[in-house]
Image (cartoon, rainbow, N blue to C red; front, side, top):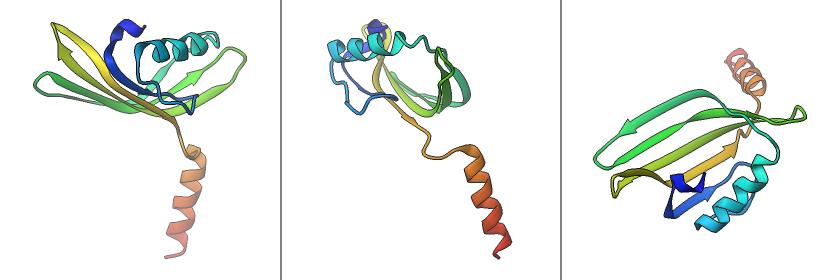
Length: 113
C-alpha cells in the first residue's frame, strides 16, 4: 500500500491522532488498520484533475470486522512524478456529527423562523 504514497507524503489518518510524514510511519498505520479487516464504501466523491496534480475529495465509510463502522470524509492529493501518480497528501477524519443529528438540527432551525 505504501507504494502508492510519495516519499515525502503526509497522511492524517482516520483512526489515529498522529500525523504520518514518511513511508515507515504510513506503513505502520496501515499495518495496524488492516488487522481490523476494513472495507471501504465511497458515498460521494469529487475529482479534479490539473496539470500533474489531481484531487479526490469526498465521504466514505469503513465497516470493520466485528461490526464497528466509521463514517469519514477524505482528501487525496496526487502528483504525477516520474511517470506515476502518487499520493502526496491524504487526510481522513471521522464525521463530526451523525447524519440524523444534522437533519434534526436543520429541521428545528426551519421551525424557529
